[in-house]
Amino acid sequence: MKLSYALSLALLASTWAIGPARAADIPETPSFAATPPADWSRFMVRGRVIGVLPHSSAKLNIPGRAHISDDVMPEVDLSYFFTPNLAVEVICCASKHKITGRGALAGLKIGDTWVIPATVTAQYHFTNFGAFKPYVGVGLNYSIYFNEDSGPGLSGLKLKNSVGVATQVGFDYMIDEHWGVNLDLKKIYMEPKIRLEAGGADVRGRAKINPWVTGAGVTYRF
Image 1 (cartoon, rainbow, N blue to C red):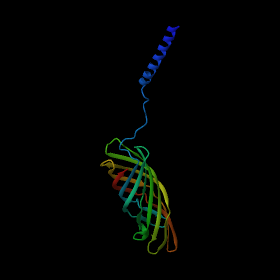
Image 2: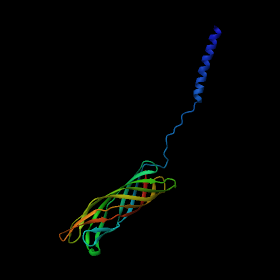
Image 3: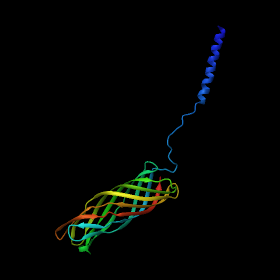
Image 4: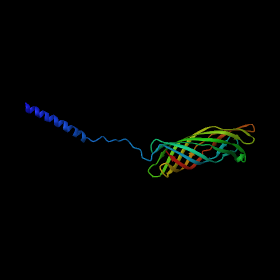
């Protein structure tokens, strides 16, 4: 009886000793949480100088046509990165364009207008080229026309706000973690309706502006 009791105590002691050892041998569960690259940041802001180069054709319901002038101005855009590759970019600026006659209307100053070509694009950024980071994008443009000014002998010049597609290609070249330079090219489809009065006649048409927008500037990531 005493022997049986002693064996039971020995078995119990060995169980206590083996238990912690086995627990110590079990490896910790590895963590599979994705860690973003060290150089990835969610926000990017750029300051550019852009040139708005319209296709510059406007068809009217009278003989002749109209031409829309180019313009150069500063522009600021903001990008938000959902991942290192996927981002959305918002741009906003204001440009002024002169509208002059062509063909049968040659030499006629139709007027001028300001436009805010508010544009949002979804972008894919390529990240496997080191400091050189090209991207492509596609999105929507909503152009707001304001402060229209009719030319001599004309009145009531009005361009209707328009919605169109925007496409984009460009690249950033990063000098360090935060600073870089940028080149950008967009094609924006803008075809607003145009209306004015000339000698009591109601003149209507559609301006196929559809500009190329070229830009160069400075990039800052934060």
